[in-house]
Amino acid sequence: YIKNPMVKNKIYRYFSIEILKSFITILFAFSIVAWTVRSVNFLDLIVDSGHSLRSYFLFSILNISGIITKFIPLSFLLALVVSIYKFNNKNELMIVWTTGLSKLRLANLFLFLSFVITLIHLLFSSVITPYTLNKSRSTLTNDELGNFSINMRENTFTDTFAGITFFVEKKINDRFYNIFISDEENKFQNVISTKENNNNLIILAKEGFISQKKLVLFNGRIQSISSDNELDEIVFKKTELVLSNFDSRTTKVPKVQEISTNYLMRCNNGENVVLIKDNYHCPENNLRKETVARRLGLPLYIPLVSIICSFLLRSRGKNSDSFFKRYFIFFISFITLLSAELLLRFAGFSELNTLLYFLIPIIGLPLSYYILKINLEKQES
Image (cartoon, rainbow, N blue to C red; front, side, top):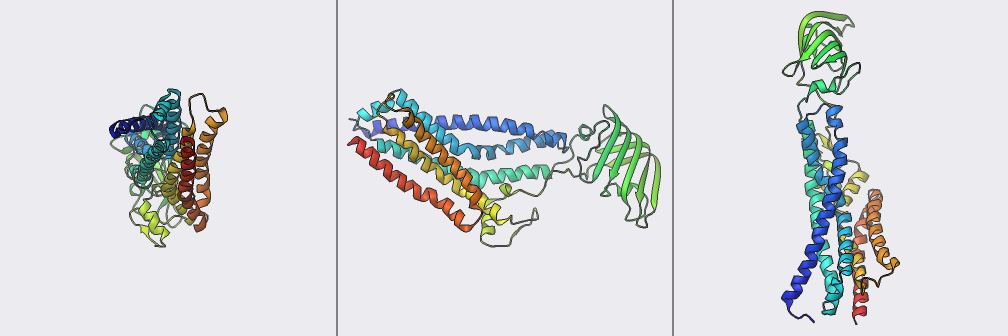
């Protein structure tokens, strides 16, 4: 029997490091794969929305925290199960048991690690992820016009920018031929006559190119309808259209997952607050409650999963577990996390559902721990 506390601490430190190493490895693997797939989908920001490469990369990088947050519970579950099976297959657990170390003490170690992961998850879900996602939205909102010529395609109507439709018959390098522009929001109002309230501008040109964020057009005409329903037409040999005031069709209003937890909690308290910077009101009640439950309630299920996985410590050797026992506990742990995700859909329906979502892990944790303690102490007696 090991009586030296330093030796015991080294053993428990070894188990902790191995579990955390597995957790970080699994979390990194899941996150990098999901981030790669999502980054490919984000290419539409360049192709269809006209954003720059810099904004694309910054937007993609800032979305990593949201991906990491989603995979933390599953990664910890897999890390714990894989580590226990690895310790068991290498007879490391058998050596620990024969030296007199308590199984319950090891289960407590798993529980302690789960609390650490829970705090990390809470930090990401309630603070870091909303902040970075809001920053990513601001990146697109404040983004200047990217490479304009990328969005222009031959014989294709392009409506990348809000209120403006482009059409070019032919494109050679950065030079365009037979150009059609429909301006529904009067962004080019300054190029027509001095009459006010002209609208529905139509610009036709034989040729054009882009220079210093200006579209230079040659040999064309500008048509518009005045407030008196008269058709105005201006013929030009050369004119310049400023492109800096273009707005992409990318949504600028922050989504609910991009709103700070503090703001959502103020909404829950009944404050009719407005996010002045973004002119955004409190989201709908069900969506708000679901988001708060996801950020603050879902991490509470991680310690419950660690207790369920600790039932694997009942094993007496690497070959003693039946197929049912070896995989049933993992199945129950996985179902617990899956149920926590599914129940989020109902958490926003009412205050009672939200309360129950938080109470399930709070009540289930001590109950599961009590059952585990009885089983492990009975086995060791």
